[in-house]
Image (cartoon, rainbow, N blue to C red):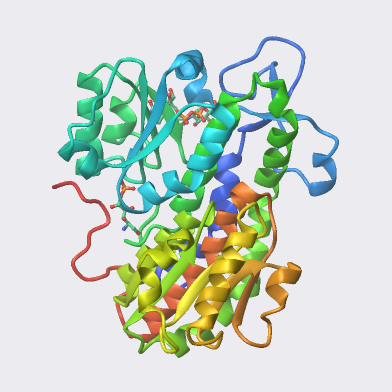
Length: 398
Ligand code: UD1
Ligand code: M6R
């Protein structure tokens, strides 16, 4: 039911503090004495989520994913991890890939299920193939799962719908527990998918003492995420409505970002085009001079994701290049509240400020204003938000 919301999409965007809480519930645990149990709630582990920020500094905690326990050593011993998915689910894999590479220290590739099948991608029994899907029924992802099974790879599902084909046919996996998603545009499931893949990466690195500090900062970020998403929703909704009214007659919007935010560009572009039918392109900021800069003039709306992470200098360089081709007036900069570099643009560009969280989770906050922008654009253009033309929630035929 939509309750007080006008559409399922808006309801699901606003449900994210709760859906993320459900995704994390019972999975952030404190080690205690006694044997470990597979569900994270037995005598070996005590669930420590939700916690307040104060407690978190005192409690050394870990990730526990009951669905991966039995196959964890097989996954650690594998030669590579291949993520396979479509659409928004594919973007979530891209968003978390860097963290998986950093923590698991395994080669990680991310494949569009249709392209994976077209290429008959070589798969070996030493591979782990991870199938990410909201519905668990997407035709291409399911076919790719059959293909991986026939090549004897270990198959893992990251799926929202319990009892779906992908959930049943994989060797093991993790349910997202995000709750039902009705709107064709996937919103709350995207953020839960990113979180589950990052939890899987944390689990894969849990034997590595050299990564303790990094793991601790990501775990703290995970526990803070629901409240940070709540703060973001409250801070940006009205602003995104105003921005949508300004953009509603535009033909095209370009979105630039790099590092962790490259996937955010792709996902934001997909969300906007899917529900508002405005042409969008998500572009890696490092590619500007290799072609896309030709599209930039003083009329082209540009969204730039400027997070404070290791790519910040390069992102600000891209910002200067775009600004030099038509000024800052039609630029929307998504950045962290309090970042002095971004605040320099407060009088010249539209600044969308979100709370700061650990670098690899910033994408979860940055996508929220873009989900709202796509919703408000569709409303401003008088379109069917929950049921965009030509699209179905679950694509079961190729
Ligand atoms: C499970 C229970 C949950 C309970 C918790 C604690 C289910 C669905 N989940 O959650 O209700 O609160 O224990 O006791 O009963 N799986 C796949 N492929 C997938 C997804 C999951 O094979 O794509 C498998 C997992 O390997 C696991 C099972 O399904 O065997 C349940 O997975 P998940 O719900 O993620 O496990 P828990 O979080 O432990
Ligand atoms: O159910 P799945 O996650 O496998 O679906 C994959 C895509 O069809 C889906 O994410 C699609 O891109 C969404 N409608 C995007 O919002």
